[in-house]
Image 1 (cartoon, rainbow, N blue to C red):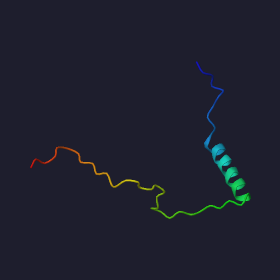
Image 2: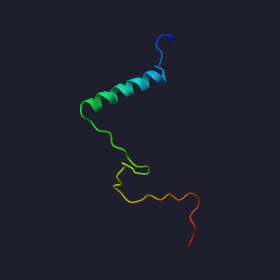
Image 3: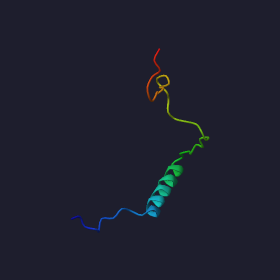
Length: 59
């Protein structure tokens, strides 16, 4: 059985480490860009893919 001493860090520790990384990034001259709602970074390389569920109508 695994020991209970190895615990997952709580959310505040994670948030603190992210804040420290952001501060270090900004101090090195990095910039944070604001991306407007609805903008996607995914680039479509193929056409749309339509999925039809159920039986196809017979001709």
